[in-house]
Image (cartoon, rainbow, N blue to C red; front, side, top):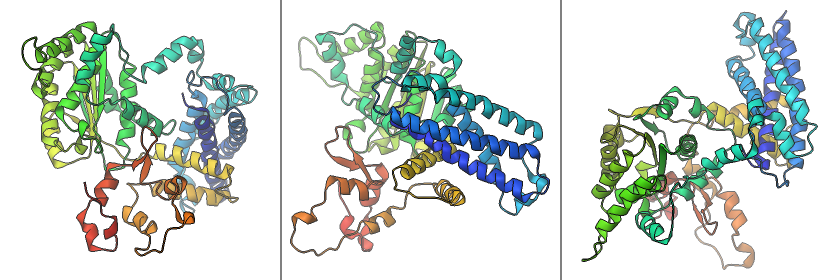
Length: 504
């Protein structure tokens, strides 16, 4: 379900987690007199598993250039090992060198330890089998669920592609395309693809298992509001929500999504948002397209001047479209980034209130204006940086940097301390004031030499947390709305960073 580089990186990240858990278990064994024998046996099993995973990571890297399609199978046994190790790590986190001396504080019963050891041994058998693979596809087959292997390749690929974009189920010609494009003022597909690209492998799974999300996904007419601080990962999680919703779409269930982007005013208006949602519904059912086509004709009379669509007109169109489906999923991200917040909130509330078969999910900051509009009818879930996701990212990055020589750690305990420090310190976003100070340059410089030119690679290196490449790869853009928001803050005029202040 991921590209080869992320496959090898995910496996390598699990090696770091196995190392840390092994170290903590052995600390317990050494610190507690007459420690439970099963604890030492579990530690040995994890140590052996770590060695096998290390070999598997190297094997996966050897297939990095392989052209085979690697979206066919999920790494079930790798995910299962990760869940088990993360569970052990979570329970061990509260122990320090002093509490380890208290045998009574050990959180696992002997029966549970044996169960964990047996589960890891079973998954390791699949890892050992994968080590004999001579291609990436065979490696992934060895790590997949048995039921996944029974599916045909075409079935699996069809399921994957279904979640990558809205499936068109209507006949399209030039005339119909003209109708559709009239209402599509901004195409959110590019934002969806960017969010998928930014998402680290195997992160966001916690959301899929969340009871509130499961209820939203399986129950008609549920309303969900996911909120969090800037940089909490809401936009990337939006891609996970869209993926899950599109996987349920068929002839009777439809899905549509939109991303409000502070950089593009076309995404700020109710007409732009509703037009994109109407477009997506129209291509999923012939009858839905006919509703939109009729509105197009109303706006283009044979006698008289053409008119532009209105928010009210599009609301009525969408209301008629919704009645053609059993259930419709609407996902809108970043409503707090709209300059016309009042209008957008009123519009979204209006189509939500007038429907009894639409499941809507909205993502934004927790701002008073938004909370007042949504809190009565929407179930709120606070989005924060989850330990599981952070651990997955940190362990993968550490292993990759150690592999290429950017990070050198020979002490296993130091490795554990670094990992825990990064995970524990990941609450919230980076301090922009500190980053700006690092990037500060003298106000008065000499004449420009060719050696003084700032190249693209240098910009990416030193501003990596503040910027990212645009969708077309031709320019840089702020990595997040909060970066631009900070640099537009007039308080910068009061200190030494005033030359970084930007305007609209």
